[in-house]
Image 1 (cartoon, helix red, strand yellow):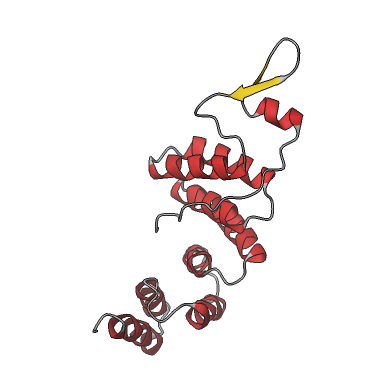
Image 2 (image 1 turned 90 degrees about the horizontal axis):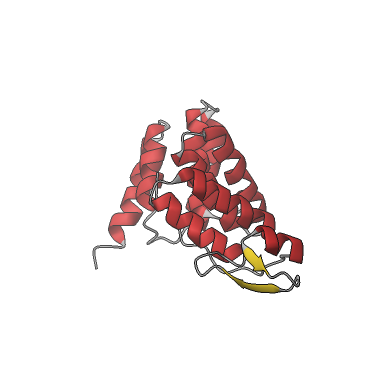
Length: 178
């Protein structure tokens, strides 16, 4: 599986009760004080830490932080993608597929998410025609020089589409000749 991309910044919708449960300290008078230095204060912070934990293969913590990011910013597709990749790395393909599907509902033209869904659905032995539809969408929206053309080529080949695979490899090679 490819490494997840860095999470973009997102607005935080934290309410005072949520802030208290997220690690924001509260004094005896009830006023909020600064959070612990390493504790995220918004969805983007939880997503960044979750991505870092995924890179360190600490999937339980990564998923917990990404759960928080998704709860705080439920319309941010990249957070669902990141959590899906963490689930996938943690050998939870059904949860991964659910998150990738949610990511694609929010951002239908996300090439990495489309390719992840193809791979996950291939593991479920879904019909090739449905998988090829996702690959065709990725092909249509990806830039010609997109490095994911190689992955698309391999997936087309795996699905028994040698001409489509060659076309992907050719596009990738052509952008590197100059």
